[in-house]
Length: 397
Ligand code: PMP
Ligand code: GLU
Image (cartoon, rainbow, N blue to C red; front, top):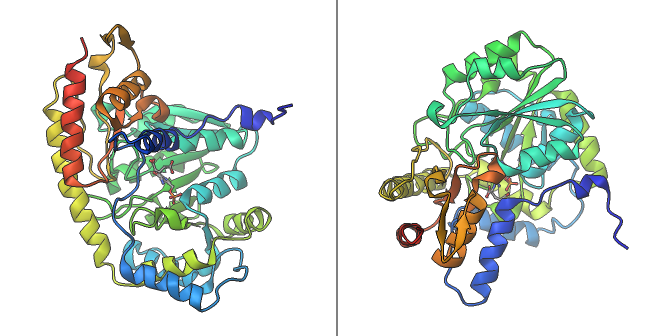
């Protein structure tokens, strides 16, 4: 007899993972699906990082690691923060986990009590809302509007704050919109938080290096914000290491200690071999990061141009990350062979079944007018996919 917890029963499955699986299932049946659903670089992990993983196996890194991470990796992370963000953290303020998704979960489980409100700008990454719900918190969604380049304003933030607000979740560069907050914009949000000292910021900066407009800005750079911000980052996107499952958090010592305690009961730490590979990634030659960014920028330009060429779509030209998030609602109300397309879910299923391209419905990101297209794949596949999309949409009447 099924007898699951309310916690799991009320949890939605991850739409990004679900679309990826659907696409894999069709591919396994021999259908030539182009998968633009899941957000992961198509590049192979750079050789010097792979070599470090192989060496870790040969050097017998097969025993339990320290719960917060190996000292050399913690040191590499503190050096990364100094080198790239001019931020000073001690190794004790860093916790390495099984992916940034896990770092986020640790931070939320450590911060959020039942009934606490967490402000989440929409469109948001699929897992934020569900993780807040898992912690029995209340997600308070505010709309980062297309017209505002998918960024929230200080006024919106102020309007969403209540005595129950525990945290603000920021993601810049953003998945799925590609919006990137400038230093001035972050300062303006920090100014609002000045009047609300109890509010913490969870800042997801996993796309830090995939930024097409210049240097990365973090809200933790402001002295008055650093002690009330937890930075979430990882190696998945910047170093093409999604399967290694290494993410990390940096924040005040009391929070790091809590995540350490939690992790000691949940996973005992992250995989040894992956940690050694991550240390090589963060402390080694960084030219691979710049090379991949160059490719993403070229692909972004290609996709934005092709999406703009499809009648009825409106697209924000992303400043970072590797997604475009066009408005597709002009197609709602149309149909194909008698089947109506009324939502972004309907449209994504139609594009999958009839166009053989996998995308993710905007509903899952809190914006039902849009769909998400990942451009972390080859130029050839992108051109093919966008042609398929144009043809499939043209067939809707
Ligand atoms: N945050 C955002 C915004 C993401 O898109 C992802 C996607 N993987 C993650 C966190 C988690 O990354 P990972 O667990 O692979 O480090
Ligand atoms: N973050 C990626 C995405 O949004 C990977 C999938 C996931 O972790 O949910 O597609």
